[in-house]
Image (cartoon, rainbow, N blue to C red; front, top):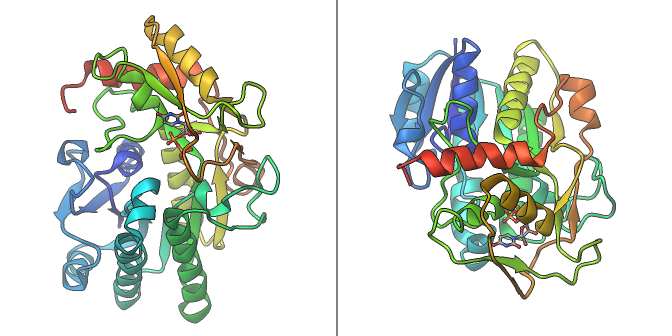
Length: 326
Ligand code: UDP
């Protein structure tokens, strides 16, 4: 039986497909290539180009494939865009997931691993954040992911769907093969933006506010290597396939780094001075987001293998400076 990966041409989706195939799984990918890249799709995955909102298309894939479990990444994920075009996010993320779930139920596929986000917590009430802490998103993107989680919980009650929602903190890094890495257009994430400076396509990195209540005044985030995220999806799928219960897990390393620490580390890794400029805060940025990963460790047996930020930045740098794909 195969695993179906909607969004398997995107950043985290493509890395998960690589890990799935390396661990011997049979994989089918759905992607509309709106933000994903054809080059990121593993050559051994069967690729279906189309949109999860298109019920006939999704039904067609379930009819062709013998699917045991779905690992769902297909979504828009730009926080800023979600604030200026919220309905696009409800349409693609929430409605898309609704159609996918309807098609899954119609084909008696009742296991799904779901790509969620730390953005569901909004401004955290404490750190490290535990899964049972209040979820009060401060942006549309986070709200759509929380809505999708709720949709799966109600579908479980009504139809016995089993789901695992993985709330990622800050994904970074690239695949060890050097074949795939992080490529968003437009790019909004800190590490790839920093690396554009030594690559010559950006003059300086902006620090979005240095007046936060943190030791150096800049925001603190829990950065997690994309391959560690991918491994957690595989463990989650195996957990469901062996009869495990629905659950929600944070995925991070349980340790935070400030924007300044990340920039300093990138200077060390790249050997480039990387000029910086402090600009006003970006709206909606909490000062500190750090995961408690105890639950994923206890239930899934998962923990991050990459915990050194310089290792994570090196892996991103290795891909960015060698690729001609972006
Ligand atoms: N950030 C920054 N300059 C940039 C991009 C991001 O100072 O050019 C900061 C941002 O305010 C946040 C952290 O870096 O505190 C990580 O931002 P990113 O967009 O990578 O991830 P997010 O935490 O928003 O998911």
